[in-house]
Amino acid sequence: MSEYILTIGLEIHIKLKSANKMFCQCKNEQNFDNLVPNTNICPVCTGQPGALPTLSADVLEKALLLGKALQCKINETSRFDRKSYFYPDLPMGYQITQLYHPTNTQGQVSFFLDNYTNERTIHIQDAHMENDTGKMIHAEGQAMLDFNRAGTPLVEIVTLPDFRSSEEVIEFLKELQRIVRYNNIADADLEKGQMRVDVNISVRKSESDPFGTRVEVKNINSFGMIKRAIEHEKARQEKIYEAGETFTQQTRGWDDPKGESYLMRSKEDALDYRYFPEPDLPPLHINDETFKRLNTQEIVIPHNIIKQLNEYGFNKEYINALISDKTILDYFTTILSSLTTWSEWKPEDFAKLIVKRIAWPIAARMKENFATIDTLKFSHRQFNEFIIKAQAGSLMENQLKIIMDEMLSTGKNSEEIIKEKGFDAPAMDNDEIALLAKEIVTENPSIVEQYKGGKTTTIWFFIGQLMKKTWGKTSPKIAQEIFEKLLK
Ligand SMILES: [Zn+2]
Image (tube, rainbow, N blue to C red):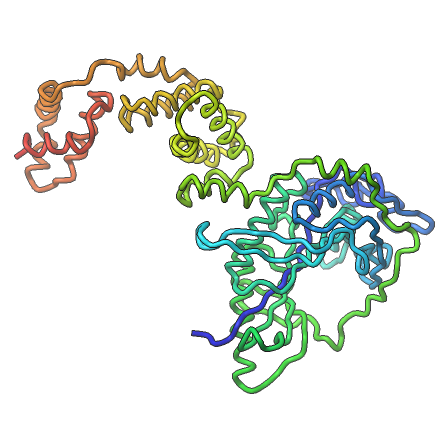
């Protein structure tokens, strides 16, 4: 048991899903993989002398929405600053960012831990706008530059050092991803570099101690890597303190295959960015009209939805299935509200019936086929009819499964499938079922022999046959009892 307390703060860059780049009219591509290098550029984003930046309205719009979603204070007046440093992929020789007066400050994000049982809130220092750099590509012994990404809009979210475990970090990042995705602010795919996370890690012995020396770990691009990097860095720092040594503030990179961090630079050789107010851009004033519009704009807070799902008593598998994709969640809420408007059933009772059918097989099948919910072959009305039939209680679980499967493949009405399969026929009596079971036994002498020879798992063959012949009107348990008697 470690006696050290872990303290973590995050800096997260999120690429906004605006139409244009931040300060020019170039298209803001979300994926550069299929784009010929240096084809999506102009004098502004390549820093040509005399070219002046103008803040794109749609970039501001997305940044403000994100501020609202993070429950930030949106400042009436904010400013841009220059962060100067030399690197070949930075054509202007500086990045335009917001250091002194960011647009969004003092926010917070709540999320669940431990499979949606415990709630946690962490605080956001600010969420400021910043333009991205180009890319340096190393190939065939050469270094090449691609400026397609230069000037694309980012928001950097800076949290307070509120995190105490890697689990908290991961669950927070997942909630953040849902926030930007559900509100169409960003795609935030870590692997595509649309979300980049820097982790500030320190350890100390007690909450009342001052913070330990901070180490920033950069270049981590999956949840698994973030978790491993945090655990490794914690152990590394503890070992240093235990040996009675100290270290200076530093930036480290993460080498995932090796499972260890490496020194990039220490505080002594940290860059001096010579920040100063950006002279080419006026202060940003947000007018009343924009505030009014922002106030009426609906923001989806995924955490609140999860809370509601929790109140329905859903298990974590059901919650995961619903929140994995906003369209599936929307499908669920639409069905739920359309059913509860005319029924006397309590919403939570309907909710349970619906989620069961959506989580499996609908959401599972969508995932399997990389399909979206709008490709479903049946309508809302058809799904509602199916749920009503399920609620009535006269169909057995395996029959319901067969119906839903058939609906997914053919788009037929449940009513039609029930007729076709004979599920509406009066229930079979036990004599009838026993007769069918005898038939199956007579038809399969070799398997009977196997069973009697000790291979008792063959009973499942007989059970399957009986389920088929009775169209699922008997339960596997009853079938098993019958065959155990017959095969004695
Ligand atoms: Zn441009």
